[in-house]
Length: 555
Image (cartoon, rainbow, N blue to C red; front, side, top):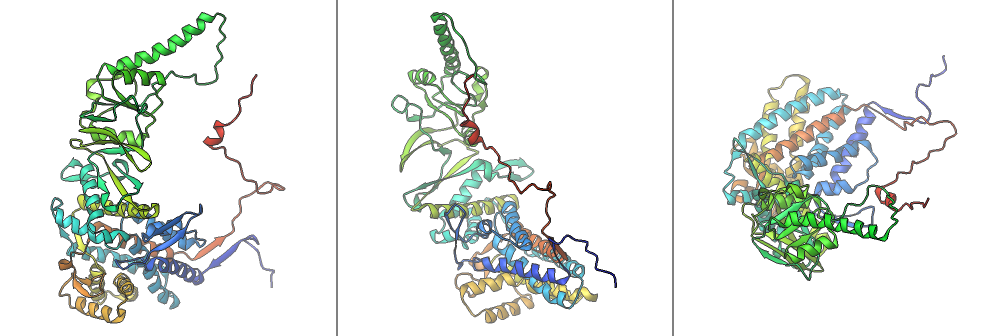
């Protein structure tokens, strides 16, 4: 016998064959089990401690998985799924994980019977195509402008969330916000940019019912000189600047040696004249409100307050963009380039209010604002964070509907219909792929089953009844009423889901399951090559914060 040849380094761990697939399936099932209880209206909340010692209380699948620190590679890729889902459509983050976990779970039996993973994947992909076809068949198109229908849809999306107890409140906020910032692209397409133009301001205090969508924007700033400047202006003329209204300091340390005392005064005068010039250029346009992203010197402040102009400085760039969208102004980079058309006159009211401890500036009552702020009030920070997460989901759903106004039934009805159709189809499939195809059909039932579990009803009975109802294909809209656990018609209960949320859920889940099944080797412990004798040293990275407090040594 020859001595065994070592190909891999000793420090490497290598697993291969079906063991890897079993491990991956176990890991993904573990992830799915963590958030299984957060599906549906009767869902539980999870409390997570993050690295900073802060608490997150939520039942949003993505928010939970984002906080988890997972060691297993397969589990990591499961967590990526819910992130994709969140970025793509904003809802259905929990369903994706539950469905993918179930798809892998049913594949385990076939791997034990030594089916080849690619055969299973082929069957799954076929099942995916057919399930999307079923979705197309049962989807119904709605009118986006019919507020009641959209409200019903958004409500059923939030019904599974913690804020469902506040009724229509969040749904109304979400629909108001998304319809405000919708932009027509022509050809019946609408683009809604939630991230850029909808700002959620959380102010602790007050009641949740005080939350509202402003017809304009608000931001956490006060005017520069509170005593001298007006804090309330009706129909303001607004100028937005992106340049400092103070004397430009030298880029690097400059030394000026002055011999005569008068020269010093000349220098100061130059600075003052420079600022005065800028202010005169701005005041030519008779603004009522000047907002800049950069600094504003005392002198400029004096000129403005003398002219009765309010000024706000050091505003965030994103906020400035929102104000521009809301009141129709153009952000100007150099004061000498101001034109009449750059001035925003679309706002009806500017005022500074004190909420709690902070001053907030409101620019509201805008004509046709294309940006808005959602003001959330509530008893505690944790609650507000959760409400904000729910609002994000609700706004995404409203956006999806505006983009693609098609609905499918919620409450597990869609999954059951898909499952029943696939079961019938599996009879026509020839060869070895038939069994995994049928298994995929059964896996879709994970969603209604989990819903039933979370309601605490007799799962087997409900599932059998539902399967029977769907098997003869009489009504595709029969599902579980998530609150009571009774079997109900989703059309009457007004429990809907957006079509592209469901389609994205199915696609993401099945494609991910296929990817994980096709892994047959895990090699871990790969080390970077290091110079001999050099211990692992971490490079120190200087952050912006450190760069500022470096002492500049005198020459």
